[in-house]
Image (cartoon, rainbow, N blue to C red; front, side, top):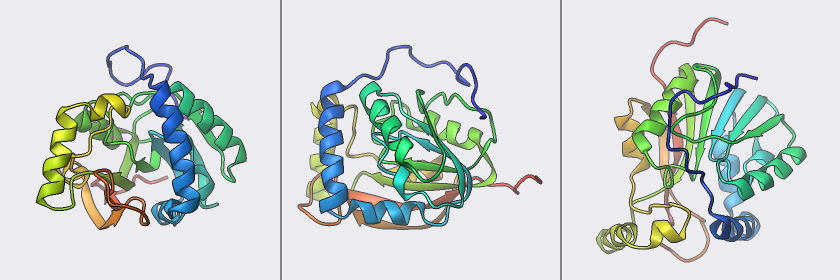
Length: 230
């Protein structure tokens, strides 16, 4: 295991603890998985992955059952205690080895260039410092390594984007575990120096009403550089 005893950088020591949101998220996410098509979206996110993978913001572990057998291991980072407990239970049912550990996206407790792929799944909306988190993604990913992303953010036309910005400035983040609905994850990846591969706009979930959280992007990005010889 390529874990460190401490993170690569210092972040605020205040714990991530959103028990009410975590309970609601766990219940709603399971319902969306089975009833609203999110299981198929997760399959598309993870199809074809191989080698060593780090998943940042694993939540309650719903991705774990969709990793292909070509994945050698998954290190899953989740800071929220209740969601991490549920992720540990999901890891026991996974078909690939999954190690669930606490940690912040802005200071990942793993060694540099230790992973072949990074999975970002509905996490950039809630990290405190997006550029710093993506800097950590670059650090832990080997040169030429792959980022798979499924993120929601700004979209839906002028009225919806104005609504999203208003929500972000008021009570939405406080009530929803730090979630922001008006961020632009694709632009953030580009600004962090990743090379964007194929991606497409998706609705999350793909069935159901269009909400401020519905406008997503599913795709691939790469850390520039040639892969190191192994």
